[in-house]
Amino acid sequence: MQPEPTNEPERREPEEDSGGDNQLRVAGMIVGIALIFLGFLDVFLSISGGFEIDVIPFMIYFAGVAVWANSVVENLTLRYSLIGGALLLAALFYHYGEVLFWHKQVLFWSTVVVVMYFMFYEPKKRA
Image (cartoon, rainbow, N blue to C red; front, side):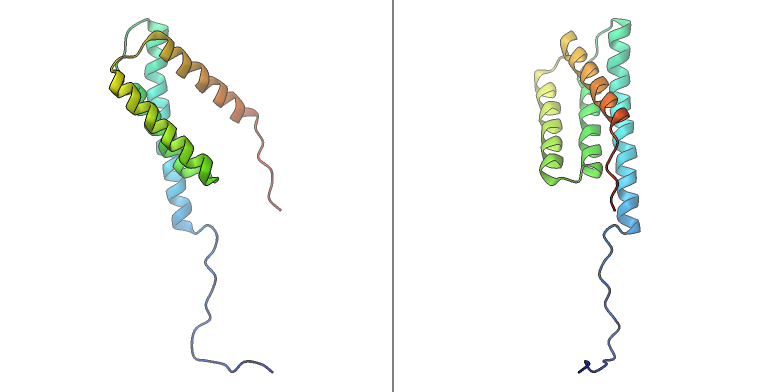
C-alpha cells in the first residue's frame, strides 16, 4: 500500500557542504594563511637581519593559526585544541611582553617542519 500524495513539496536533505559554507571555509583558509605568512615573514626577517621585534608578529602568526584551524581542521577536538593553543600562546607572549631569540628560532623551525609535512602529505581519497 502506497502513501497518499500530499500537496507539500518534497523535502530534501541538506547537502554536506553547501556552496556558501565552502566559500567561507576557503576565505578563512586564505585569511589564515595570509596572517601566518605575515607573522612568519617578520620573524624570519628579524632572524636573518639580526634586529629585535616586539610581540605583534607573534600575535599575528597565532591569530592566523587560529583562523586557519577553524576553517580547515575537521576533527573538532583537534580544531579547538589548535585554536585554544594558538590563542593561549598569543596571550602568553602578549603578557610576557618581549620576544627572545630562541622564541623566534622555535617559531621558525616549527613552521618549517609543518610546511615540510604538508608538502609530502597526501590525503586519502574518499570513495
